[in-house]
Length: 85
Image (cartoon, rainbow, N blue to C red; front, side, top):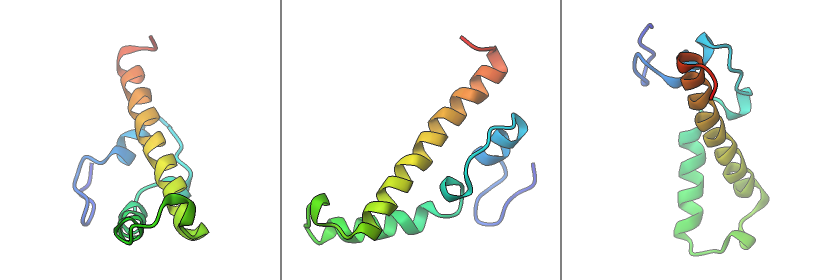
């Protein structure tokens, strides 16, 4: 694999591409950091999730979906190596 700027050489998305696991762009690499920053800022205000603005709730939902694809993608890689369980 080629080294990606600011990310390294062996990134999950590179391995997922090898097994043709598709992650929707909205949940893919490159967006997580800014979402986490906005969520941390909101948490630091002490407001409950119910009081968060819709835009920050959307960041949270998309972050969860990103992590879901990380988990399901890793399972797909393991299955590709070992065969499905």
